[in-house]
Image 1 (cartoon, rainbow, N blue to C red):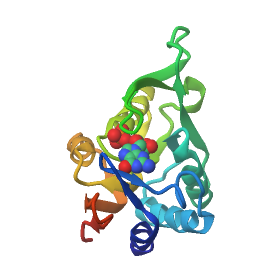
Image 2 (image 1 turned 90 degrees about the vertical axis):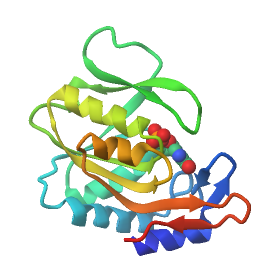
Image 3 (image 1 turned 45 degrees about the vertical axis):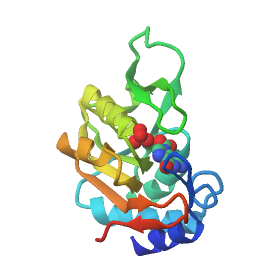
Image 4 (image 1 turned 60 degrees about the vertical axis):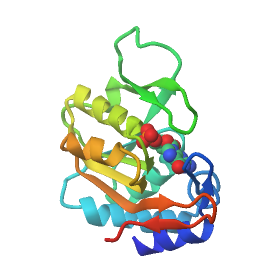
Length: 193
Ligand code: 5GP
């Protein structure tokens, strides 16, 4: 998605440890007009798939998913990051390792909001090592819902998440795939296509 790549080139900041900061337009301050275009692009990619629910993860996925959901006209469910264990069996749970925060946490979704009748599109801001997306895929699988695919805003193509998840047979559509980033010059290079 050219508009998105232009914006990342203009406002994205390359930080130490191969972290791309896009908090001026995507995951702190949010450019709602750009999110609208992102939502339309996800709809274009998945409109034939009879999506009836969008699943994301708190916090930065929520805004992106909600704006996309307006185009799909479906509800959004977000997985909560939880410190407590699943003891009552009323939630689907899975374990995620955070790339940016360097810790492990459980994510949960209530069994009330995900089930066999659902055709789920997962939406998230970043795909890096793939742990967040793998955790979300597991929630969908455990619920018996159909996973239509995943819509990712920015994939860091030089990390293993994309091949890991695609290798599991999941359709992953990333709107911008970063091939490499230069920490010295701040330049960001995208994969063609
Ligand atoms: P993964 O589980 O694929 O390693 O990482 C996915 C999550 O980590 C995303 O939801 C995002 O919040 C965060 N993340 C990973 N890499 C980056 C990055 O370079 N920049 C930012 N802003 N977030 C990242």
